Image (cartoon, rainbow, N blue to C red; front, side, top):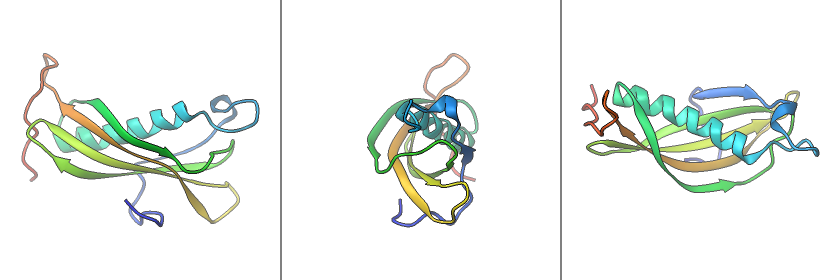
Amino acid sequence: MSATEPQQAPTIRVSAMPADANAYGDIFGGWLMSLMDSAAGLTAARRARGRAVTIAMDGMQFHAPVHVGDEVSVYTQIERVGRTSIAIQVESWARDRHGEESRKVTEARFTFVAIDEDRRPREVPTAA
């Protein structure tokens, strides 16, 4: 995505809490991956105009730790839309709650498949 924090509004923004951290105050990587998956899922469902499920996560990179109290912003960008799938690039940025400077903490690509009521793949509608 970018070397500087994206200018669009984040898909999700939350504060990292003590329950999400280890004994040293560093946030668990799994918590951050879950947040990224949720943000990508919102974007996929909006683009698919319905239910979409995660089928892959590629290139997960952790760049910097997230600490208790940090404000975490997750940005999503659709990279590719296939017949039934949607690839979404996701970046997470963190900022100390009293600071102004943000740092990129993670990035990955998530792939979703649009599914129907029977949980079978369906075509992603063309963009309107």
